[in-house]
Image (cartoon, rainbow, N blue to C red; front, side, top):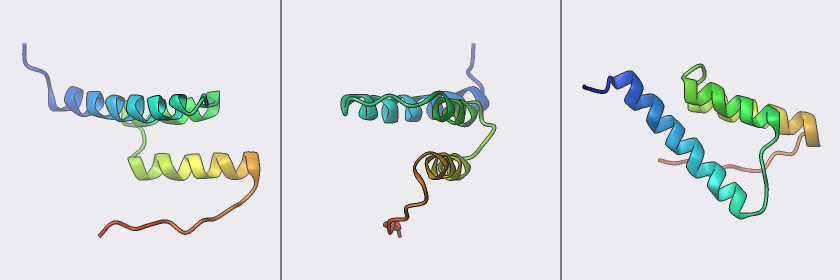
Length: 75
């Protein structure tokens, strides 16, 4: 049975989130329920990677106040 491109894309997004969470957990942290819900939206394909990042930034702003650091851009 062939795996569809949609299933492959979802599996890739799931691996990306799992890898990111593993890194966070190695630092002794655990994402909040709100953050986990945002990650699930990304895995399901309801939001893009960019939208997920914006949603996490907004969540952190609500929780900790607005702090902006310069971001390195990829070229």
